Amino acid sequence: MKLKLALAAATMLCAPALMSAQAQEANVYLNGGYTQFDGKGADPGALTGRVGVGFGKYFAVEGEGSVGIHKDSGVKLDSEIGAYGVAKLPIGQRFDIFARAGAARTDFSPGGDDSGFAYGAGGDFFFTDHDGIRADWTRHDYNDLDSYSLAYVRRF
Image 1: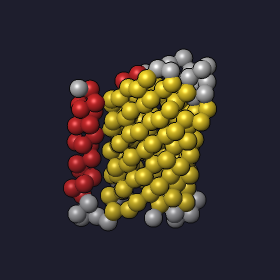
Image 2: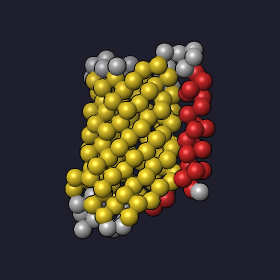
Image 3: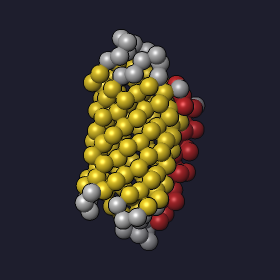
C-alpha cells in the first residue's frame, strides 16, 4: 500500500513536467557514479546509473538503478531502483540545484527488500555544455536510509 501511495505521489509530481513538454523542448541526460548508503547499522557502497528527461529548465523525471559493490559490517546492497519527479532551479549558466521526490526499492543481504517514498536534493555543475558532475542526497523514508551520490553527468 505504501508503494502504491508513493508511486501515485511520484506521478502527481511528474504531471506538470509532462504537461509542459508540449510547450518546451525535452532534453535527455545520463549519469553514472558512486553512491554511499548510510543506515541499517552499515554503510555499503554502490555503482549508480540514472537516465532523465528534462522538460525545459525547471522540471525533469528520472529513473535510477544501483548495484552494490562494497559490503560494510556484513551488509551488502544488492540493488536499488527508483523513479523521481525533479524540480530544478538554474543558478547561473553552469550550475543547477534540484529537489526530487518519488518511489524507490532497496534490496539488502542480509535484510531483504523494502520499498516506498524517497526524496532528496542536490546540485549539478557543468564544466562544458554537455559534461558535468552531480552531487546529491536521498532519504528513503521506508527504512530510515540515506544515500549520498557523486556522479558524472552527460546531457544531450
